[in-house]
Length: 574
Image 1 (tube, rainbow, N blue to C red):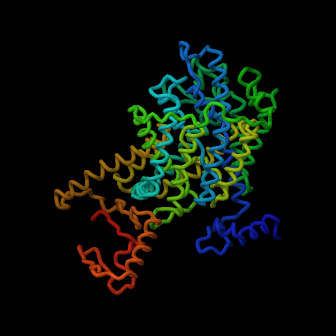
Image 2 (image 1 turned 135 degrees about the vertical axis):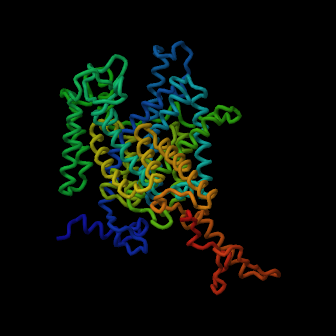
């Protein structure tokens, strides 16, 4: 029997919306198998629920920079009441800007690039922005205003690189074992986040072994070391609430294919955590809990940007501003590129031949534009979120997922007191479950050849241990180049006499078809070629064959100068 959801899915698929987003049944030549309108809506809600923590977390981190507040007292103004009040207002500004920029970026990503990827100010980048660049309460090497100007320019540099196809090309030429390893490493990364203080708090700090079991009460933390348990580990009621309702319950629902399993687990855990007079409350009876509860009780509120809107200081003549810009540039390009490619592969949207994905140029341009707009709104760089994997795991395959996520972030601008009150232990279990789904990439890594296996393993290892996707990618690429570069040099010097015994098991490195030039440039070139063909020319073109491997089909009606879709492949000799 057809349900209301089935009829709605069919109607939407048979509309202009269905054809734009390439829903299954839309009749589009490249419709996405298994995509359904209601499934994507549910996936968008799930993605937002997993990302909603960024509203309060990003505001808390970036406000530590002091924003535009001026500190004139000693000891970084930690006891200056007027300065602390100004920071509190900056934090409220940042809640608004974080939700607004997450809404804008996610909606643009969904509507223009048709990808199920949520966008928001990135974790890690916001910490680097605050503590390494601006410094705690403005004690860094450049000011908050100058740092925003660096982020603003970084976004436009990204935009140009994306238009030229450089960002896409850099990702596509990576060896496939490394690409798979990045996805698996991100799976471990988000699972680790879900297990630590950003989620279930099962894992905490350890003064001897760096990490150890956590989950103790705050009263059992080591002095001056939050989340370092001296004793009484795994005694926190919130830890066990998250394990059972956000973790085990979610897994059982997934086993029986209950739709919205991740969202149900997050919602139940959050509702249980809201009453105050319980041992698992998100609003304990202390100063911090009172502030959270006072904000929660407002339900609906609107806080305009008083301090951080358009606060840029375009002091590009200062060398340290360029140092910050270049650092943002290389970390962000590796972080965002690795995350986005892993998400589209997880969603099954990557072309197995070209190793690219539909609308990749548009996706990277949206990312770059959002970075610059985020700077105008006073926040750190916006990036693709690995929590998008929760929505993809729920079946999200089109941009409708990202649009729904963005619309909920837009509502969060007004309902921030409610949406910012989802506790971390409510989403921790979902992150662990999604990490277990993403680790499946390791099955396809080439473990038979050390030159492929070791760089891939180092990538998987370094992403969660360094708490940074970019660092894992850097380690993997450098180790791959050093190991396989040495083999290549020795083989050339010895005329292939000295080769690893199992070199035949290695994964050939190829440049995927399509080249570095993005699709829109190829369209322009074809158009210009047609114009040249139709115009009288005194000197006709002559095409000469320069290499035996490069052939020209002289019988084709197509101009031989026109770029071919298939491109050229280069592989290691065996």
